Length: 169
Image (cartoon, rainbow, N blue to C red; front, side, top):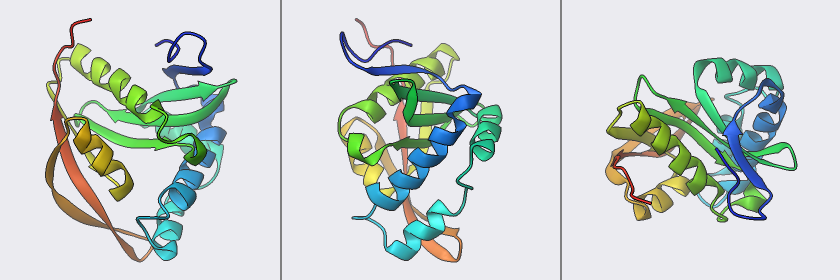
């Protein structure tokens, strides 16, 4: 993977074990701050408590899912987890102050290319309310709503899918 654009400071690559601590922080802040307009404080606290705020939990997830990272000055500022056998994007989080700058979209472009290279023609995601709208604008199709329980709180998610196609450059 390569730099976002000429002169940009964001680089895209596969995760490394040392990214685990940054992933924990990106996840926590994306949930607690980034989703404040879509979820109650109780829902956000329950969601954030699902995964420990420590590097070892995220390093363990790197062994389960191929993890793509957006890094800035050597630090992870966004990440996406791919579950290729399930043909699914497992997670996508970006540091809140860097949202709406194309980082998540670029991570998705890289993920889609990887999935296509593996012969996967359709992918799915269970997106948060804050992510779903943007994905639909980018060609993802609505497949319904679902509710998940996290720490005693019910959280709505939107099920989406996308047919993957090669893009001529």
